[in-house]
Length: 166
Image 1 (cartoon, one colour):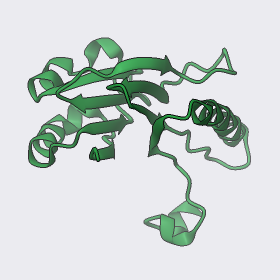
Image 2 (image 1 turned 60 degrees about the horizontal axis):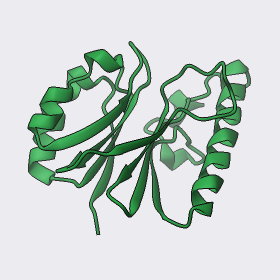
Image 3 (image 1 turned 90 degrees about the vertical axis):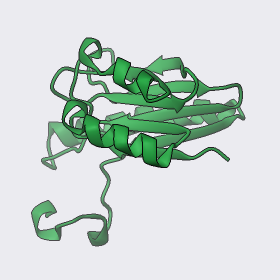
């Protein structure tokens, strides 16, 4: 059984030292990263490869961004972004094959604040597109993992501060 983890790095350049330390200590087989906050051409691919991981990235300068790392192998990108909204330029979804038997998706859902409003409407529509893609993946009848930062807090105990999130 592979060890699969997800990690919102909130800026990969700021967390790179800790990420490399984590990879060395825990040696997960697959890592899904969110909130890279860096364009594809500025992401630290060499450092990740030197740590023994292959990677696929979907970056965005200063915002969002997702990646999938695989220990000892190169993930094969299947899909970058979600279909259904040609205007959506956010880097929030990347999907890759890990070997012959596993599909992994790293997602970073919009937070939707404030609610109500256009950002919340965008989040709900994004979630509908994600549900459509998840149905298509399910129809493939393969092992699939959808990991990431869902930005969903339905209960008070899902947040660090109920008052701040009210």
